[in-house]
Length: 213
Image (cartoon, rainbow, N blue to C red; front, side, top):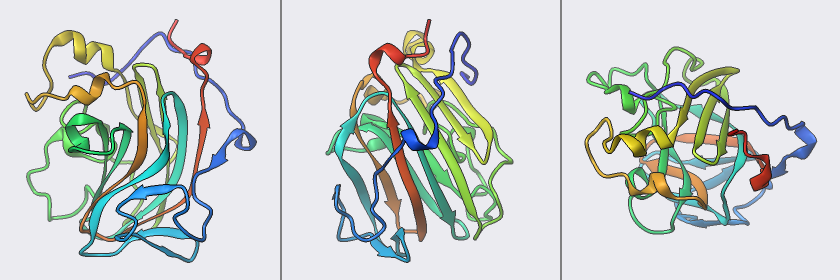
């Protein structure tokens, strides 16, 4: 199990350093399942019963990504990073879980399936999601092989993908070639449950800003 990463220096970024990825009005700048997602009251919303990958038109390599999300009971979604346009993002990209851990819908939830986990690869800490129906804030730092997820001000995942790649196996014992991706699209992975997103923004990191010494 790989959870903690050491030897990194955080790159600081002020709010004015971030660029919005969503204009609050339409899905301009987004590709993929644009017919499945709606824009409601300044939010990107996936209605119940719909799904698919909603990806940024642009590709990103190293970045700090911030957004807010609101779950419904039992909701299951995901955040794809460094994703290609085609294929299952859980394996050919890096999928960070977006999930209502508290629901009875998931009685046999595996550690690597909880919210914030790298699906099938690295479990995240539990206990920091707000009650269902409230807005959560999340920050994802993707800097070289260093991935960190900060949920509501708490670091719930902090790992170095090199540790996983060097070990030669993953927790779910399945191939995850996407762990080697150095760039790709960002986006949400709908699985039929209503989830809302807002305040979606990014700060890109130059290669020289990599925190790995």
